[in-house]
Length: 126
Image (cartoon, rainbow, N blue to C red):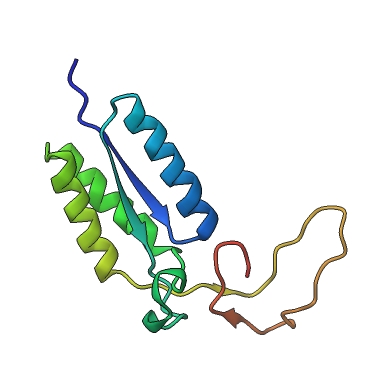
């Protein structure tokens, strides 16, 4: 049976990199072709920080859209990956919030004062 393979679009967080790499290795061991693209679009962190620097945030959505369009157009797995890599290299975003995450049962944080915003947040509020 024909299997075009799987493209994993992964946000640049250590845990995500580790877990998706393990998942890719498991899939490959079962004969499933797998490619990965890491997205590090957070422009709040300088590129000079290297591979552990910029996080993957909102720009990841655009990388998914580009990869999906390429796959729907019938491109090979490697060609879809190349389109996604190019999109990942061209996208930049920044996280902004006017409130912090509230965990039910815990006291609400007042880290961000009323009427203010915080810039440079990651997807986990860090």
